[in-house]
Image (cartoon, rainbow, N blue to C red; front, side):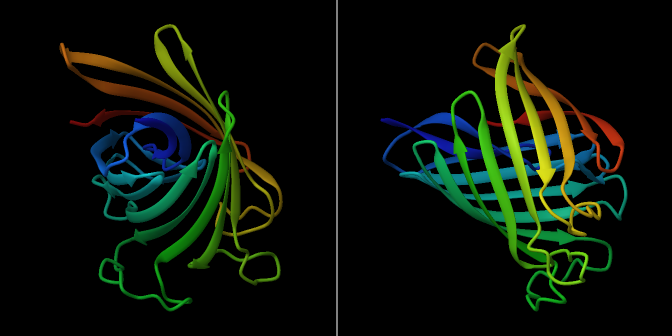
Length: 237
């Protein structure tokens, strides 16, 4: 058995690194989050939602699927993401295919033309230093935003996560920013801090061998001057 770092997608849609023990065989996982609101990188994408996820991991490679289905309003984001990542020590790289479906767009999954697609392809690279992890994300294709000149922005986002333990709870502090102008992230017109968040998680025991993680997250977006408080729980075998 060896120890590797893998990427975990939380209910907010953000990626942070975590340490797990992995064997030299295919390992699978499946879980589902139920959240009071869908917040992604400091942006509100809908009200209450169920967010299932599954992954297969082998020798540092992880193939994952993640989704979000808003069940309050028909206009809430319905999302289906596929990702592939590789981790070696603290370094990780990956690509993600995001598919966002809204009212009237439910049957457009196989539309890939650049000006018509509802897909966004994103590449990421990051490093886990132990006390904190740093990730950089850039859109490399699909329905990207535009810059001030109206051209494809190759929209990017950089995020620093710092996990810690306090009062028998697991905490994660996050700072995220958009480095340059793009309409993809709340019409950022230049460098903008878009995500200041603090999440606390505590596992509530159900029986001797199983519990349900319950989390609360406060998020502030200095760019849009908005704040959110989200609660949720994770169900996993």
